[in-house]
Length: 234
Image 1: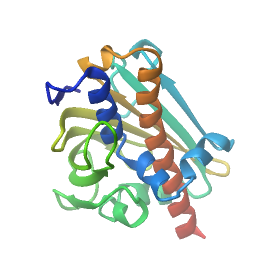
Image 2: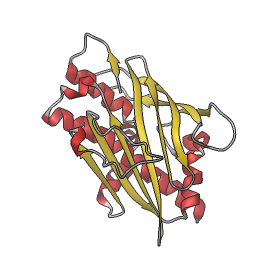
Image 3: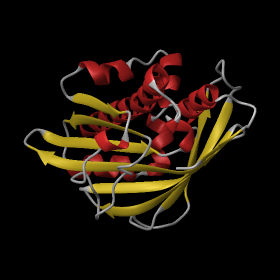
Image 4: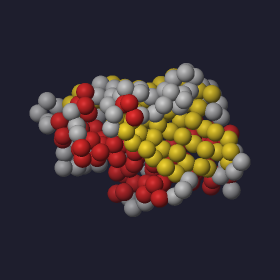
């Protein structure tokens, strides 16, 4: 993805702003509201996350949906997995009923489908998420327009699109979800890639911090999905 930022910001400060924003603001919002599900995702045996500081160590080609995947050459990749005690069709229905995301995801302010009918490979949706105030940037709101690239009901979905706020503009981000039926329910794998020249300049702790924010957002998202699906299935 290509990122535009204010030219007066240093690379480190701009990258921190990107992390707070593109991480869907879920990890940061969860922490500020007292939600500890982000740490639970890393501590329980049913959820795990893996990070990569280089595209070469990112998701493999096996993780695809209709032959499409996140960018293996992206500046940064992150993935997360969880097991849900519910049938795969139930997990799929909750996950793809995007207009109801705001009912179970604290970081989703508004959301709307831009098409009609069943969720499919041609679906598009627009949603907003808050970016908390930090030492690097004022509070902001991102508007994200997601276009589904491929969808196989009960199996996988991948979408991509831009995110726009007052401080930054992200031309494209890619997010993949894979659902696998198990003896006990459903295994969910999700992965996301960020591709921006700005991120290439980050090294060491700065790069790890950005990766952790992205991964934290994914962890909180799948924990919220698990909680909502299992509550509905009970």
